[in-house]
Amino acid sequence: MAIAKDDHSCSVKGWLKKYFLEGQQLQKGQSEKLEEALQNAQWHKRFLARNRRLIAMLLPCSIAQFLYWSTFISYGRWELYPERYEMSITMVIASIISGMTSQGGGAIAFPVMTLALGILPSVARDFGLLIQACGMTAAGATIAMMRIQLEMRSLIFCTLGGVIGAVAGFHLVDPYLQPPQKKMIFVSIYFSFAFALFLLNRYRGRKTFQSIQNINLSKLGVLVLTGMCGGVLTSFAGCGLDICCYSVLTLLFRVSEKVATPTAVTLMGINSVFSSYWRTFVMQETSTDAMLYVVVCIPIVVIGAPFGSLIGSHFHRVSLIGSHFHRMSLIGSHFHRVSLIGSHFHRLVLAAVIYTIDIVALVSAFVIVKLTTTLVVTTVVIIVIGFAVFMLLTYQGGRMLQALEDAEETGGMEADVENGSVNRAFSDDGDGSTALAEGDEKPAEVSKGDQ
Image 1: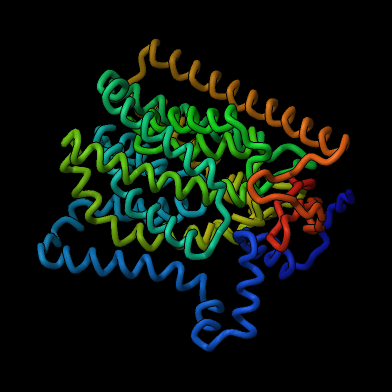
Image 2: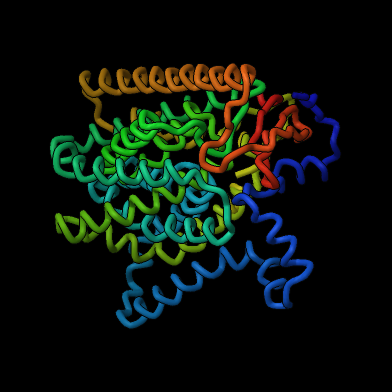
């Protein structure tokens, strides 16, 4: 196995192309189908293949815009925009980030609404669920139409766990938490997640895969448990399942961020639809204020989230993880592969965005929330426990990876249970990484120069 050497001598044009336009991680065989369509198909098929990214973004957006404006104009509630414009502005950025990273739009909306605008956490939670049900579902449709590769087993079993956790959380956890507790728990967990991204970025020579290797009942159980934990967090904060799934996939199972990010986006969209249904039709407790805020944000998020998914699918996987800059003073020296916007950037740039958001949210919470000694101690304990859990995931993931490599050396472990054999070819990404290719697909990576 040849490990490529670091190469930072590329031109500005080459650097931009490498880190911001690396290319997408497509489903197996999709690259050949696209190439064949461009060469031998009829003109309309060539047109669809050549413009698939643009079509994948515009089609869900156009359908959503038509449904929204035809309904909105009939009711004529134009006064809502000047009354609630602050959330429309917030969701311009939040929707793009939700499409290109593992953090849903609620991860930005919740602290803005509860800390900056003084809105009740229950209203912010309902808003986050409703708006993600629109935006992240549109982003998921874009991901599906572009044939971006997903980790399907985690999508299924984390969804199952997420449904159980959300229902349990709505009835058994959320009613017993006070608003200050919800705010501090949220920012504490997301600050711990930023630490997980840091762990993910600091290791050299980290081999990653396109799917969970050697799947068994215990690993499926881990996915269900992960979904349950994320569902409980979603029940009072409006998001959280996405970061739980993403952390376990990347830290424990060593799945490439290029696969984990669109999986987390799709997963959060599905869970948001279910949670919105449960709150609105089963519990009949969805806040009216949350619905009115959603009305002025829908036309924004159905554009921003698919756009973010498109960009993210072209980033280098390092961009999606975090901003851990490597030997360069430029703002983003490591853009490489993530969702439409996120799918084209290096993971370090996007990680920087996540670091900044989570740190600002934590500091703001300590400044704005009226803290008691008990609440401060609880916050610190949650952060410490979060750090410990993510470090444990990283450690156990390393052990599992070592076991895989030992099995390979002793003779012929099958690398991908779902897809059969893997073509073990390693390619040079030009940034000190090698990629474990699967057939004709865009390879999963071994990042080497991201320390």
